[in-house]
Amino acid sequence: MDLVKRLHQVELGNLAKIIALCDDLSLNYFLIGGSLLGAIRHQGFIPWDDDMDIGMTRADYETFAQYAPEKLRGDHYFLQTAYSDDNYGFSYMKLLDRFTYIEEKGNVNNARKGVFIDIFPFDRIPDDPSQRRSQITRFKLLDSRIILKAGYGLIDTPLRRHKSEPAPEKIEDLTELKHQREAIMRLYENSHFNFYKNLASQYGYDREILSGTELTNLTQVPFEYLQVNVPTAYDAILTRVYGDYMSLPPENQRTEKHISRLIMDNQVFY
Image 1 (spheres, rainbow, N blue to C red):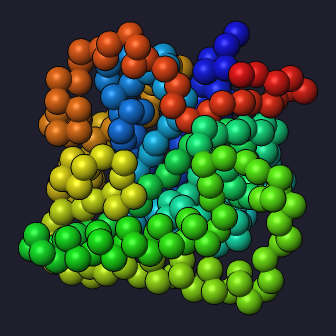
Image 2: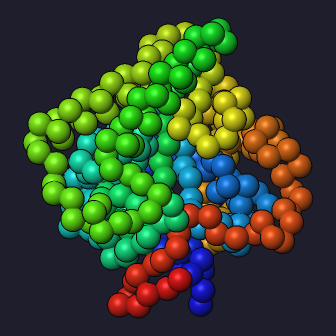
C-alpha cells in the first residue's frame, strides 16, 4: 500500500472522530476545497490528494476548540491550535493522530507532527471591497510575521535543529501576535454582513466566500465509508473555486502536494 493510501486510512479515522465530536457537541462542520471536490467527484478522496479540509462557522469553531480537548483526553488525538502548541503558527486548527508522524514538503517547523485534518473558521466579512482589502492585507502581514517568528522554513538545517528553545518572553510575544491576528479575523463577527470567508484560504480571495445560506444549509453525501456534511450549494461553490470541477486534471498534475514521509506502525513510508 502506498503513502497516500495509508494517509487516507488514518485521515478517515480523524474525520470519523471530528464527526463524532461535532455530533456530541451539537455543532456543524462541512467539507471544503479538495475534500469537497473529492466527495462530489469521487465519493471519497481524490486519489492523489494527501490532506483533508473542513470548514466551520466561527461560533462552532470556537465551541469545538473549547470543548473538544477535554473529550479527547486519553485518546490518541491532539487538537493543535495556535494556543495549544506554542510552536504552531497557523490561524486554523488541526486534529492530529498522535500515533503517526509526518514530514511535509517545504514546511519545516517545530510544531507537533502527525497525520492531520485542517479545520478552518469561516469569518464574517464586510460588503465594501476596500474594507475587505484592508482586512485581508492586515491578516496576511501579521500571519507572515507569526509564521516567520515561529521558525517555519522551507528546508531543514543543522543550525535550525540545534537552535535553543525560545525564552518565555518570546513565547508570550508570539502568543500576543496570534491574538492580534485572531482579532483581525473576527473584526466583523458581530456585524450584520451576510458573507463569510476562509481568510486562510489558499485560493484567490473571491473563490472561497460563502453566503450565510451556503454556510448553514447543509446536506449529506457519501465519502468512502462515511456520510459527511457538505453545503447544499456545492455545485455553485465548486464552480467558483475550480471552474469545470468534474473534469480531471492532466496526469502530470495528479500527485500528492504536502506529505513527503509518514511513520506509523513502526514503518516508514515515502
